[in-house]
Image (cartoon, rainbow, N blue to C red; front, side):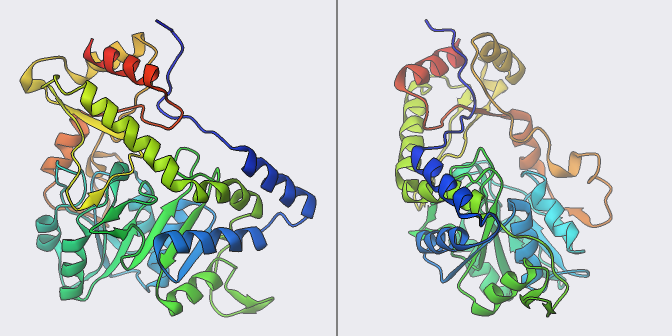
Length: 367
């Protein structure tokens, strides 16, 4: 058996991207320009929305979405306690308060009942996190938001092309995506905000450009949140292959689930019947109560077999040093988030894997 390491993720830049990057370099127009416009137009088409506004990274996309909605000090934004910290940092950066409602262990996304219980007169928005590539229950969340007059900001950083009830991630309210190196679509660093609202899109475009609509005409206090044409050139060909990229991840995920089916101490990913999972990560839970091995032992086993893995995420946000006693981080019940943090482990699922790689991952996991 090969002892070649199998990484948790692999970044592959295809020849079409290399050609477009060279085109940008030769053009002499490296900053935001025509390539960014092409990238935005294609992404808006994928999401089925009127506007996609590219920015410099995924965290900025979240911040920009919140600011464009007018959310700031005195407002509360309900989100997940089981997420990458950028979700919380973005809320705090606007001056708003992050209210952490618990998740469902079935999909690792916000539990709708927990969200409803967390709403107060200060609640301005719900920020569902579409974790690992599966969307939150947006049918229920959007109905709740409409009934209570709340904005929706989707943290869809891990859900490019995912669907709920046939509707694409980023098409509920305002969507926010990351194009970090390990995402299903990458520009190295980059982000985008999606919306059907003309006024919000206009505000986003001015905000990202130092508050300028025209040169030296400052309409508002803004920021340098622009994406470069080089970044857009890296990502643009991937948008045309997104269906293929996601299909490869789904195929690999199905093979892993089939191979691990007899390990009753592993809870493999479940896919809600109304949703399409794009498997940014293939995440299992190690159920120590059922025997088998505990998570630490499984990590050791995978390491010995040169199989990459990740623990996303080892703590609920409220249990992290900087946030547990933060005056603008409020946690309701986070029981399921803590259970997930103590038991999740992600296995390689990326498109660069072949079936022999997947067999090695399965064999190493089962021991």
